[in-house]
Amino acid sequence: MLGVLASTLFAGPASATGYLDLPVPPPSDRIVIDVVTVNGTGCPAGTAAIAVSPDNTAFTVTYSAYTAQVGVGAAPTDWRKNCQLNIVVHVPQGFTYAISKVDYRGFASLAAGASAIERANYYFQGQSQTAYISHPFYGPLGDDWQSTDEVSVAALVWAPCGALRNLNINTELRAVAGTSDTAHTTSFITMDSTDGAINTTYHFAWAHCPS
Image 1 (tube, rainbow, N blue to C red):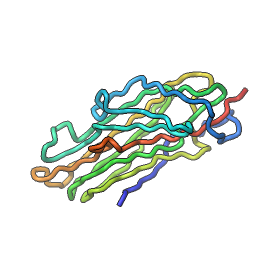
Image 2: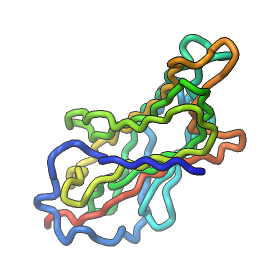
Image 3: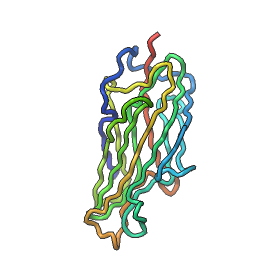
Image 4: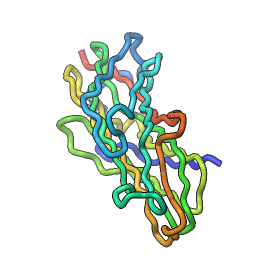
């Protein structure tokens, strides 16, 4: 059974004032995402890849080494893993974008008494860092999981028109031993898999910039 959680994406104020015809279809021109930095214990060099959907409505991050764990076989620092993506989205002239929804997927194996947390925040360069949005999971559990962060159109935080601003995406996984028997069990939460097929998808909302 797939566990599904949802919550609000941005905690900031509504910021759509001045943008026209909300929402609008995505631009037909191709968008380009430049990855400025990828840092963190959950995404060592070469283990995170970004791809843009053909219809310019989303981009996907694929992780291949993003696991937090406690118990047998875990190092003392393995209980918390994080990844910070710093990207620039090049959009066609006359358009701006916001991140309207994020879908996270992975697998969790938690012993009785253990728990885990997936959390994230998102902000543009020059903006105040937003609060983390957290999704908890509780053992006993051994299943795929999915969580969704979503924001209404009225509260979308838009990239400034006519300026390239880096988008910062911070994610974190935590595995918490709690009352579990760490001498005989291992509990973990992952955003990767043996075949590298676990993806995190970020959905765009589009608007026309004022003339």
